[in-house]
Amino acid sequence: MFTKCLKLTKKSAVIFLIILGIVLAAAVILCSNPRSLFSSSELLNVSSLDGREKYLKAYGWEIDPDSEESRTVLLPRDFEGALADYGEMQTEQGYDFVSYAGLECKQYTYIVTNYDSCTSTVYATLYVKSSRVIGGDIHSAAIDGFMHGIR
Image 1 (cartoon, rainbow, N blue to C red):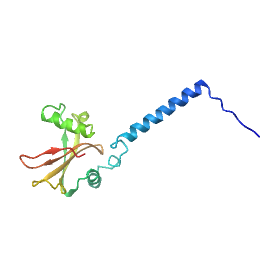
Image 2 (image 1 turned 45 degrees about the horizontal axis):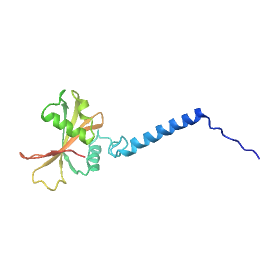
Image 3 (image 1 turned 60 degrees about the horizontal axis):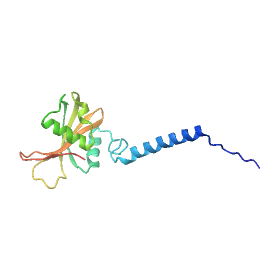
Image 4 (image 1 turned 90 degrees about the horizontal axis):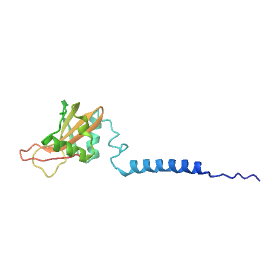
């Protein structure tokens, strides 16, 4: 009968603990945030209408795809006043909108078809840079309207 004895040296124990710590830290980071880099809504290809529609649907918003309006916009270099509030709303949603200051992106706007508590037209706006959603909102077209995040 052959048995092999493994010796646990101080060096191998330290290496094992470091590797275990890294694995556990990575697991906590990736699993603790429901909007992590690997959430299904983030993996959608939003460079297409179908991808943007699925992205909004993942957050409960249904849109009229025929209402799509798109344009290229230049984000301001400085977010001040109302723009600072808008940037803060994006940050609270988990978007890194303000870090794209001074850069061009695509803005897509759609009519929301499932916003029940509003008598005026409600719109969803997405800001997309390099096939990635960097910001967005839901807003009313009424003069005394509202605006809130997508998420």
